[in-house]
Each structure stands twice: as C-alpha cells, then as structure tokens.
Length: 502
Image 1 (cartoon, rainbow, N blue to C red):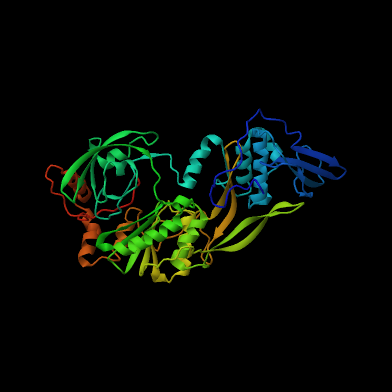
Image 2: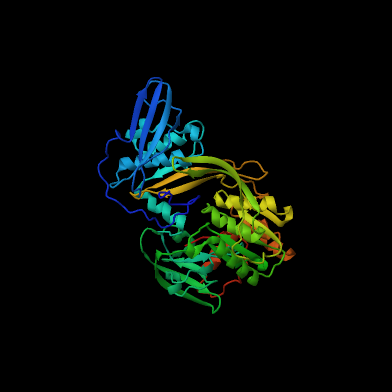
C-alpha cells in the first residue's frame, strides 16, 4: 500500500508523501456512518489514505462492538479507502485509527473510534493501549512539533550541538579522548586521540561539560595535555551539530579489545552492522590480549531490528534464530485489507563477512540496554556456549515489543506496537529485563570485566582496594597538574569507567 512508509522498529526512510495544507477540522458525518437495520446494521467507515487516487470499497467484515447510540445486534463493518486532496486533522485522526486497526497486536482491545473523536488522536491511542491490561506506552501518536526529535533519534541525525569526540572507556583513567569525528569542531581544533582533558571554560572538565547548552552553537575554551609532546594546549571551539558513528573500537588495560555499539541504525551512511564489521577488524588489529574482548551495550536503547540482525550475523553466522516474534503481516487484495497475526523466528543476517575475534566476548549491559540490544544479547546467549559469552552489569530495560513508525502528511508520527519479541527458550524478558551473568553496577561493569583478563599485577591495580584512600580525588587533582607537566602514564589510577559522547 502507498501509505506504508516505514519498516519495523523505527527505520524512517525519506518520506515521499507530499505535504498538503491543513484546514479546520471537518465533520465526521461522512467518515463514520452507522446504517441501522433490523437486528443490527452496517458501520460504514470512509478512511482517508495519503496518495490514493480513487476510492476503494473493501468487503464487509463482522464488527464486534455495537456503535455508540445504536441498538445491539449483528453489525458488520464496510471500509472504504478514499482519496484526500486536502488533509486535515480530522483525516489525521481517521488514518491513525486505520493504522491501529491494521498493525496493533491486541486487536480485541481496540476501542470504538467515535467516542474519542472530540478528544483527538492522543486520546484514541491512549484508550487503545491503556485498557484491558495492555498498558503499552510505546503505541502513541507524536504530533508534528515533537516528531522531528524522534526522527533524529531513529536516523542518528542528532540535533544536539557537540564538540565531536568520544571519551575512552578506560577503567584506570579520567577524561581521555578516544576518537575524534572527522570535520567536527574538535577535529578542526586539532584534538587527537589520547589527549587528556583538563579544563573547560576554566573549570574542571567533567563538572563543566555536564552544564553546557547543547541546543545552539556555543563557543568554549578547552585545555588539554598531550602526552606525545608533554605540552598543555588551550583551544577555542564552537559546538555544532555532529553526526557520531554508531560503533567504535578501542583497546583497554592490558591490550584488551573493546567495541561499543551506541545505537542500531540502518541509515546508508552509518549502517550499524556494516560499521560493526569494520570495528571488529580494527579492534582485532590493535588488541594484544587474545583470550577475549569486550562488547559494550550500556545505554544502547535499541534502534532498527535489521542492523541488530546483521551484528548477530557477524558473530554467529547467517540464518541463526535469535528470538521468536509474533507480529502483524499486512494482507492486501482486491477486496481485503487486514493485519494477520503470525509467529516466526527472527534470524541473523550476514551481508558482510569478517573473522570473528577469538576468545570470550564479555558483554556490558545496564538499565539503558533495550530493544534491539536485548535481541542481540538474547541471541548470543542462546546460541553460544556458556563460556563463549559472559554478561556484566545490571538488569536490562526489558523491551520485548517492536513498533512500526509511519509519517503523516501533517508531519506527525504514528508509532504502533506490532510485534511481541520472546526468547527461543528462556523466560520472556518484556517488562522484566535480562539478568546479567555477573551483577555489578553500570559503572563497575567495565572494571569487573577487565579482571577476567588481568595478570596478577593488573588484577591488583584493578581491584576495588585501589578506589579507597581518595583514589578518584587523586585522579582529578593529578589531571589538573598542568604546571608540573609531569603526567602519570596512561591507566595508572584504577577507576570505574564508561564512554561518553560530547
């Protein structure tokens, strides 16, 4: 159908629907027309469809609920899809109802649209997903004013203004640059990997960066130490909108390989599974510890299913079942338009081939690990031997459902839950979360994982005892010692670490 503009779990390609002018809300008299007969009647629904050229009347189907104001009996529903030369908020409402009608998993819990008509689309969606025990806050109508924020998240096109660098995920260090985005303000200012950040606008870096305004360009002064030449530099940078890659690779204490996936994207310029394959090869080339490597999914709230399938394929091979899904398959024909519930396996894909790094993969997770990230974790756990994958951190978010996102002619978004996601054998994790193999706080997950690879000397350096006696205070004070120019070697102080995007 012409109005199906998106794929499951949030992939939003360029919309081809033209924007038409809005008008005052028109009458429902044509859209919703109960025609009573003895013992029941026909409920005629004329639903606008974007881009349609001619009206199409579909075959009547049983209508379980008696229309408001009508006598109980045997009612049927006759659906007509009609062309819409001018789009209005009224049409937006009825098209939203059609999407619920077709895609929503809980079909028996849809409410009659007429009774919510005067309260708008938000009320219709709330009524359809908060009754009968569903409580699905992910099915929602997103008005045009907020839709651009959601679109930017789903496509990776952040609207926030930033410097354009990653911080290294070092368990024994403070603010150290890991990677600089090409063309970003940080790149233009000459920032490099391993530069140690000292002050931002004359204040200690970490405390100041948390307070900067990311909604518009802002000029800042950044002081940093460069171990390569022993010099302290101060540069001016004006923040701008930066497109960060969704994956990057690094090495940590003892040469342990590290890959972080920030989000699962399917955009051509940053397709996560493609970038992940490149990151694996890069990580394999620079790591020195061969017993395993770390995959960091902390704070990864998901994204597109397709890219998570590709990442799983790089690690497991093609065609491996990851989870079991129940979703809605849109059935069309000359006289039918309906969503049919089906259950199937979601399998890994392997468009790009890469030698998988040998050794155990240690997965980091936390409360922010959700959706597509949980599909990957579950797929690895159910298909790898017990010692080939070990997870560290906290209980994951627990989002075992998926949505379809569709854009309206007025620029709004319809997000409709159309998929239930369940493990192949393990208990269902939706609303519960996935337990890690080894529980730690989110901050200590990295340090605890590194203990798997540490030699005796390294283990002592990474042990919790290293954090007592003002260890964190020492690290921050030491990073401020610009005048002495005597900076300790990388990874001297052992602190919980994480990766930030700034």
